[in-house]
Image (cartoon, rainbow, N blue to C red; front, side, top):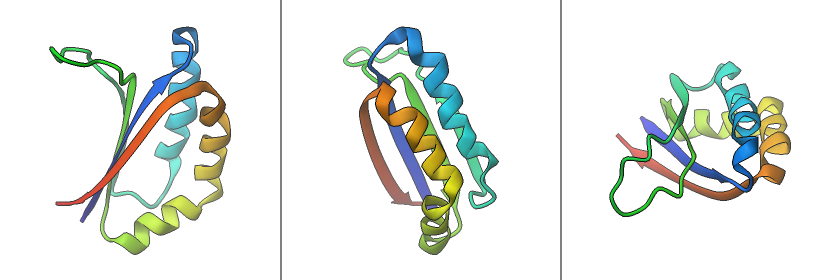
Length: 94
């Protein structure tokens, strides 16, 4: 299984809802076994720069690749990219 984790911060806090809705488009994808979009609880003592987290689970790399090739993925990027500041992604086996 591949766990795909992406952290986002927004340029303007007033646009947090808009970015969240853009990311939630991804939950309509048929490829992940699980996909969640959650707001950061901001409880860390050292850093709270992240506003939103996308967490997805995929059975294998090929399925993750198909997810990224889906037009729905591009629609989400088109909505979110102009409004985001930070994007950090990590894929781990688990």
